Length: 128
Image 1 (cartoon, rainbow, N blue to C red):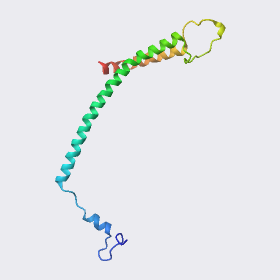
Image 2: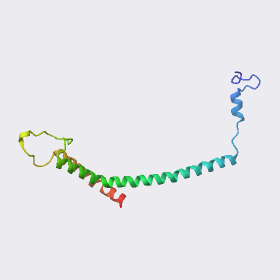
Image 3: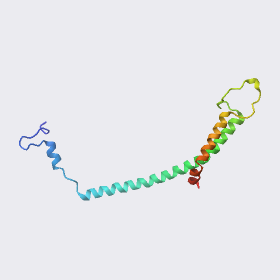
Image 4: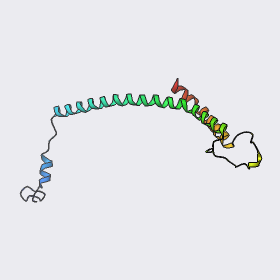
């Protein structure tokens, strides 16, 4: 318990004496630890780069196939009038067959085309 109490002879507490006597580690030890940390980080970095390149290729393939998948889903939902399609206005049953398609489908296709046109140069430079 007397460790943290100031000594009347020296005027310093135990903590102050300990912190005052600490010296830096030898330079060779610091160089060895620095080299070990550098080599470990370089091996991890190369594995990380390989992983990132694989993920970039998978993402490019996904973005390449995404418009095709969206067009296929749009075609199937419009062709077979699947029940999970959001309808803007429900048509009365006696109206007969409806010509055309849902305005939501048209709006979605317009937005999709605008996005594809906006990012065309960025996507083309990334793929080719």
